[in-house]
Length: 83
Image (cartoon, rainbow, N blue to C red; front, side, top):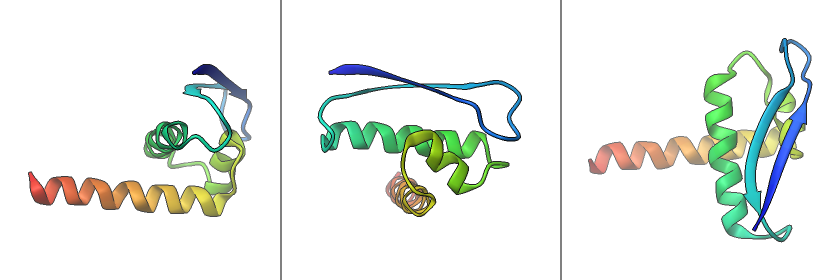
């Protein structure tokens, strides 16, 4: 797998954001799962940013970010209920 480093400047954030995740092919499901975890973690830490701005960082739409966050929250809810 190749290491991917994203560095972008977002309006409203003082310094460039550096995100690192490992990926392979464009449609690699393992890469997408890793990306989705990072998207969710980033969203938790940067609630002041819009979904569209976060999507620009990761190269996806704001709608996709909404879907990722929704799914991750559902997964967390299931883990808490089972725990």
